[in-house]
Image (cartoon, rainbow over the protein chains, first blue to last red):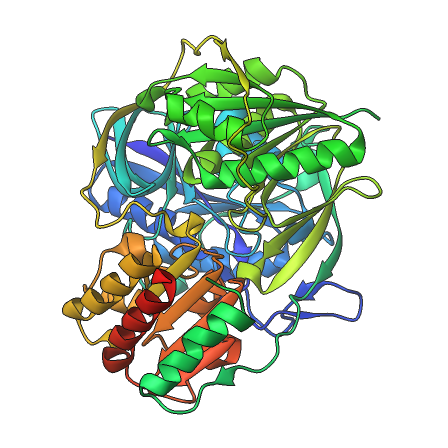
Length: 260
Length: 326
C-alpha cells in the first residue's frame, strides 16, 4: 500500500489555559502558547504509525490558521509528517471563523492533490463544536468514520470502532475516507531533537484563505459577545464526618437545595 | 418573520430520549415566542412507548421516520433522510446533543446550507435569535447570532427543563418515509451491545454519584453503586480512576470524558482537577466528599464534607434511603 494521508491540524490553546476576558471583550489566555489540538495529535500519530507500517507513503498537514499555528505545525512535522500547508487567515483570528468556512477552506486545499485517507481529531478543544469532520465529509463526498477509538486500514478499506451510547459501533468504508480520532486511538509520540531539527527544512506552503476559498465558504454565524460563567458562592462545609454531618447534608440537599 | 421550527426527537431503547423531550419543550417555547410553526419529527424503530412519550410531553402531531438501528446509526443515511424530510434551508432544526446528533447535525447543516450551533445551553428569542454555547470546555460562553436563514442547533442535555408529563396528551403519529440514500459509502457493520452495569445515561442523568482515587480501588465502587441504586443515579468516575483500571472509560466524567450537567453531582474521593471540573461544573448542585480540605473540588462545590468516602458513602446510602422512603 502507498496511501497518501492528509492530517488536519488546528492550533488551539492548551487545555490548562486560564481563560479571561480581554479589554476588547474576547475570551482567551494571552500568555498561553498554542499547541496542536490534542485530538488532532491522535490523527497525526495514527498517520505516522501507518507510515511506519508501510501503508502510508506520505503525510501532508493542512491547517486553517495564522502565524500562531507555526510552532504547532512544526511539531506535527517533527512527529513525522512530510509537509505542511497553512491556509492563512492573516490578521483574522481563526478561532472566530465558523465551521462552514473552515470546512470549505480545508476541502479546497485538500482537493488540490490526490488523497486516500484524511485524519483529524473528532473535536477541537477550544470551540468544542466537533463540526468540521462531518461538514468535510459532505463537501468532499467522502465517507467519515467519526470518533474512532480503534482503526485498521487494509485492502482499500478502513474499519473503525466507535463508542457511542454505551455500545461499540463497528463502521466500515472503502478508501478514500475521513477518520476523526477519539482519545483512545493511540498515544502520540514526543518528537526527539533530531526530528525537531529535521522538521525545520520540510516543505511548508502558505496559501491565503481568500484565494483558496474563491468565493465559497460563506459565513453562517457570528459570535456577538463572550462572557465568563457566573461566579459561585463559597462551599458550605458541613462540620464533622460522622452520621450527624451526613444527616445535616441530606437535610440540606432535600430542603435547601431541593436537589432530590 | 414566521419561522418554521423543526424538532427531531431521537428514540433510544424503545423510548424518546429525555434530552429530546427537553429539546421539544424548548422548541415549543421558541415557536410561541417567535410566532413560528413547529413540526415534530421522530427517528427510531417507532415503539409504542416512544409515541406515548411524545404524546405525554406536548407533541400534537408527530411525523415518525422509522429506521432500523444500522440505518439510524449511519450518519450519512440519517442526514440524507432528515434533509429530505425537512426540505427547506429556512428552518430552525433542533436536536438534543447526543452521540448520534454529534454525527448527524453538522451533515444536515451542510446539506441545508445553514449554520450549525453545537451544544447550545440557552436560546434568547426576544429580539432576533441568540444562542449561548460553552467554549474552552465551559471556561467561557459565547453568544452567537445567525447569518444564514436557518440553522441546525443541538441542545445540551439537562440545560433545559424536562417538561411535566401530561398523561392525557394524545399525539397524532404519522409515518414519514423519506428515501434512504442509495449510495452510502460507509456502513455500520455491527453494533456490539455491552452488558453494562447501568443504562442510565450519564449525560441525561438527574443525579450522578462519581468516584475518584479516594475510593481506593475497583471494589471501592461497590458502596457507590449501592448509593446509585437508592438515588436512581448514574455512576461516574474521574480520569485517574479510569487510568488506574478501576472502572471502564464509559463512566469517565471530564474534559476527555463525558460532559454532564445533572441536578445533583456527588463527587466521592475526587480531587477536582481542572479537566474534571470542565466536565461537571455546570451541575446544579455539587457535593464533594474528600479527606483533603484543600482539594480543588471544594472550590466549585456547593456542599462538602471533609472525610473518608469509605465511611461516609454507606451512611449517605442509609440516610437517603430513609428520607426517600417517606
